[in-house]
Length: 196
Image 1 (cartoon, rainbow, N blue to C red):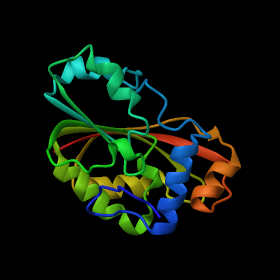
Image 2 (image 1 turned 60 degrees about the horizontal axis):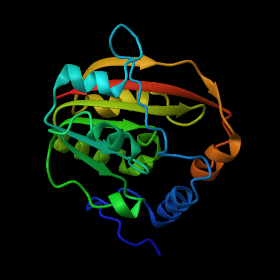
Image 3 (image 1 turned 90 degrees about the vertical axis):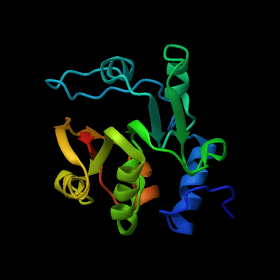
């Protein structure tokens, strides 16, 4: 039984939630422990999230699918006047669904984990939570959802300011099979800069 899942839209099946909760608890692949974000959206140059915050000057930042929440924790001391909020439905400490809106929403390697039947609602929820800018990094997989599928989903609500498709990477098959039931060995990073 999954407890303390705070997302009112409930964007997952129970079976999927059990897998996600298990992986986050186990941290077998250290998901959510990466405290550095890089979003190549200015001339395809990798930029640290700290630099993006310096540039955009948001008053509030939401990390959607934050894992252990280390990314925003690492920025709190540098930006004490910004309201930071971590949300991850599968990490008890951060499972309360956001009740405010945010100038900047970021998500790193989380949004591809939403099951297809819930994706349109996810994008609408993100749009409703966003005041201005969203920066998302997610992975596409062979024989799963292609880049075009994600772009079509996000462009229904957001203005797509920048799309960067990274180089395909070979991935461990047990990760993709465990979560998606697909046997792809290749994942391709997709970076999206969106606005309202």
